[in-house]
Length: 98
Image (cartoon, rainbow, N blue to C red; front, top):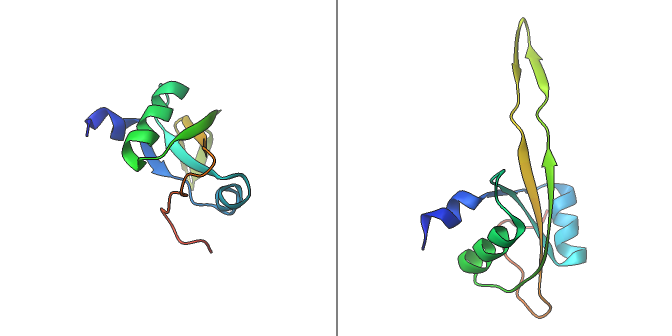
């Protein structure tokens, strides 16, 4: 496989909201590269997991200022992708449902 594919998809997001969307809307959630387009995300998911993708939605989250004691820092911006699988496709299993 192409190494670019694994640079686009960073990691799955495993939260209560992400697992709820997975069960109800047949959608999986990933953290993706900030400069990745919807078409690139679709192709990457199809190549890595060997499934058909119906629709991709993205959201950009801006970094926040954080403090710990006297030191302070800034979290970086990141991008989230909601990937809806086509009807009849088997759901991607990256974590056991809680």
